[in-house]
Image (tube, rainbow, N blue to C red):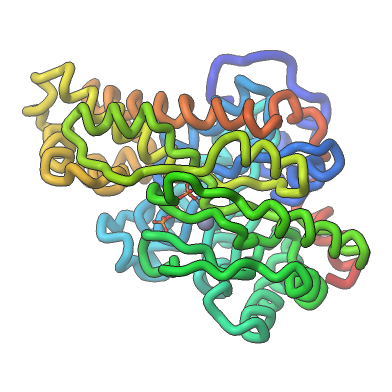
Length: 407
Ligand code: G3H
Ligand code: 13P
Ligand code: ZN
């Protein structure tokens, strides 16, 4: 277990099952099924370093919530050692997937909560295979930029491969706008509810990311309003057609204004940064959106903490191990992706090693940043205390269920 023990372990989590003691990770579907049954949403939080994964698990333990951690395709390249992660190769991604999965398994093994590890925005079949080989229990295949039929074909291929191994699959239909890298488009195309039903039926995916007004990154627009009627209509159509599946909200960071202001006071230069209102996310969480993806909020909180660390501790600016981070913060005032600042401590990013007390200060900044924003959202999304409701099902059992259902 990561943190101090916070209570007795749930009996199932101490039992030996199919040769595994304390099954380390659950398929994401086990967590998603509970959200449908008990009417709440589960945040899914992106990680780019081992200590972020540790903090995400610890804060979920505090709130007795199950945890979904996600590593994006490029995050895997970074955790595989590519500081120029956008150029990461499949080999880098394989290595990173293994690094993060090993860490997550270690932390989850004695944890009182169920933990799933999910590949976010998998680009192609190879990325999904690499994540599963590394130990991920769920993958997203993002075929949203493809024509419908090609998206179906690619997603089906991933579903076949993943379900045979008990892994969960998320697809995407409709295009989210976003300012990030190549994954994201300049304009959005909202998801058509009828197409969503067709997509679930034709692919067998467990979960589907819909486009309904959210947007990746920190510049979502000042008064963005989620088109909740798209979620409602999609869910209705699914019910009429007897389709089970989870709807996912990407681009859902709330971009806390106090954090943006603090960053700018600390030498940062971030403009037009607005997120989705917490009230709207709360509302859709009760209307059929069950998985809510958040990355940007974590990035912002970690950046604020790093800037604060160097403001308050001038001696650290010349530290042999972390002085380079200070320089990168100075050189990149408008950046808020910690991957821009962390290259000087890649051994810590990739393996969680903490060689000296200066690096320990940086790790502390990262962990506190994660806990501040993730803790808030666990409460908002109402997953507090729900860990006990998750079925303890293994990948093997899940694979058998898919086989019996023919999906
Ligand atoms: O929605 C995706 C995440 O924010 C991942 O970002 O592709 O830069 O790792 P990334
Ligand atoms: P944000 O950029 O709003 O945090 O979205 C993250 C996301 O959708 C990850 O898949
Ligand atoms: Zn996303």
